Image 1 (cartoon, each protein chain N blue to C red):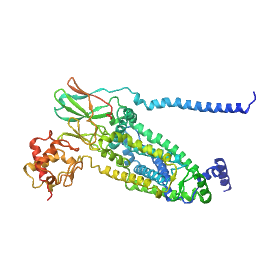
Image 2 (cartoon, rainbow over the protein chains, first blue to last red):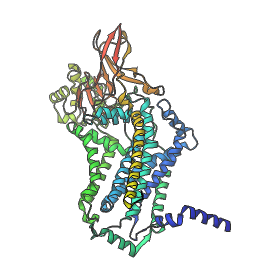
Image 3 (cartoon, rainbow over the protein chains, first blue to last red):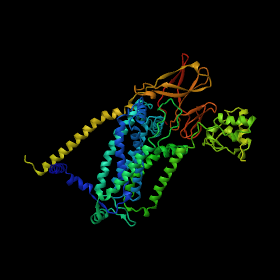
Image 4 (cartoon, rainbow over the protein chains, first blue to last red):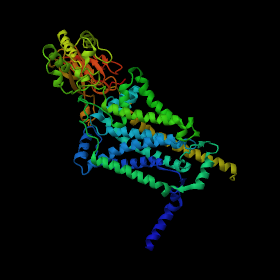
Length: 465
Length: 165
């Protein structure tokens, strides 16, 4: 026993644990720090989980187009508990994106980014960007059809940047087209470059947290004045500070454990993202969709008026970056409490609501054609004969049904035609079909006159009964 | 000469600058090969080549079909990505039109619907007529095309980079 104590004492003297490290872990924090302060540490824990599971996955993953997909199949279906490891990595990624977003919102809403914590905010913004970068590069490594086309879509957006667009796109895919050099590029970025940057920035971020102290939860009358803030904070810490460990840290531990439990539970119950078909540029039977954290952007790109799109694709990400980076310099002082900053609350509420709505809209994507619609139901086709019956067949054969719904069957790109006979006369129908407009292709050159007549006959009979 | 306070200060200043300068030089020297290596795709000369898509006779006049071909000089581990596809239509006895499969909006693969005579994109709802012009949706321009030619009874296309912007 004595020997163990002596060894521990020796180690402590050499390491300087109790003299140099313990004081950092026990740095005083405001007594009023509460449950709103757990999201940053939980993001860090999620990141560490990603590192551990990511390293495990890298033991089997081969980052080459001729084998990446096969190694994912192996990991998912053959490797011992490989499905669970992939599941934890997948749900851990989602957790990390959600947590860092909530952490960012919390910091903004409580005005914690203000003087003297501007650099805490800036390093945090970079970490937020890197987390999204990890999410994007990570989904590509699955190397299924969604992954392949996501690279193409990413390169196309880079290509919209004025002047250097072509060069950017070529650097992104490492060549003229997506090929052998592309996947290794994203792999190296995902497992070496970005994680190294994240580790470095987390180090700086934590150092700054200790240097400036954890911000006190703002009271309604707390106003930041750079001239007096630091002295006031020191006084607060002096009077009623408590050591971070364990007085505040227990909440971080409990919350991180809850997040971890949820991630593992989701990995076991739902499992990782389903593997689509293998990436194949010659397989155009694809329905590319990004993972949920980019679905809102995918939806925006469909809903954007085409005239604004070039501005939007370059301007929107740029605007977000500029706003986030400029924030602590534009508003370094003043009110902190969310109750005194209705605009801040409004902006966060608006962003969260828009993103949520757009993610849902992107998952439904009514603007996409329905390539495999069910046949028209019997309630529509029964009792039809002659031209009208032929029209119903043409409605399906000529891909009208790909974009239009009748009685719940078909695509949602164009208007529902279930009762179109009530709304348009045969002449109006003929005109609409022949000339198109409003995203409807003109069928005048495609349909024979007899086909047009049959189609119009069928559509005219669609009435509310 | 004895060390005065001033000469000591000068020496320290010199040694700091020397160390920082040498460090910066080392970083610069190291970054040249690394950056050049990473940016090498930009230094590559244009490697596009004419690819044979097969005998003219196997294509029916008026039909639009998907044809696969090999990318120029793919890497040995490229697997399926060594291949690419395009939509090829035989216009008449000696003329062909070749469309990129990539939607001109954001590059998703468009599908040819022979009965509707339209190209449909699965991503954001882009639609094109048979001649590649935009029929609906967000695409800012018609479908991209490949150069085609007929040589010794076979159709050939000139490969091209991923059509961007």
